[in-house]
Image 1 (cartoon, rainbow, N blue to C red):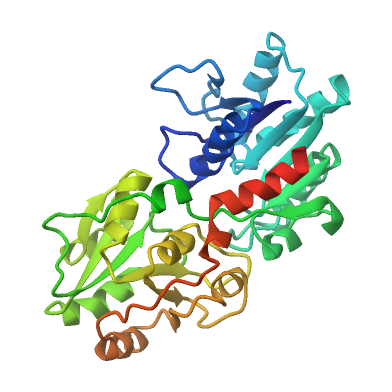
Image 2 (image 1 turned 90 degrees about the vertical axis):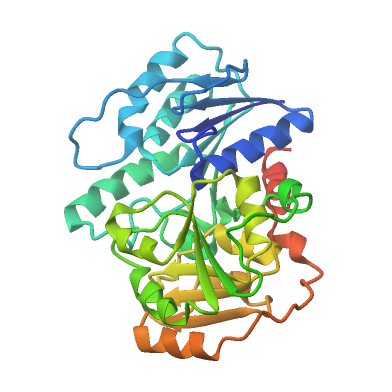
Length: 360
């Protein structure tokens, strides 16, 4: 069976958007499928089945989506590329290159098309879009979905924000990469202090929600017994946090996991909107960390609640200085509790098996 994955982001890009298509491609190859990838991420090492198609330079548009600048190069590329695939899987965001699915539908009607929405597109509550922009994006989203045989997304709350029939939608969350988590060694280095409680945040900080400076202000009061570690790109918008935080920088997934394994508490900053989930929650659970979810809206119900409801070491708290100080003041050293026996359900392997059911 011949499968094509079209992914704007792909390694060596280190963001979370590259991990999902890379895992699927690697597993498909190992399982004997003839899998190819087309990506907008320039490749450092050329591989026959990973093809780089360069996007055009950014231009002004109502919808600020990088896929807008990739659609035309993709169509041009496919004029000279054998597109006789059994399945074509588009993953986003960005999303506007999903428009290329119409070409496959017209020219190769027997090809099955899967659209993978890692986030909502038209109706993303995180973005303060005008009614006009939402209307335009919904117009495109409906056109994308019309050309698809299957829709994939990361949770049912995200699915509710996509204009799709539930019977046509499969939930495949991200999960932790069991190939690395189960085999990686614990970090050994000077940055971890075994005598203190080590908090860790893996990822980049977002603007507009989940302000980390409030937590930093709170933990700085307990610097004699607590440390905060940041794994990710330095944020110029929150540069003040690095007076207190230990900056590890952007790490490979394996390096990040090894550091997480010697920390005590994994942090999540969220707006509290129901559809929001994050890949790092699976990594924290796999590393047997306590999890502190700091929410702008307090203890709300949604995807993060659903994911963590069977995990015994989760605390929700409002992103408020007094609440965080009270939590940290009462915080003791981590109590080691055995992992749930079904932790593998949160792995990428579990999600990949759902993908196989769509293509086999």
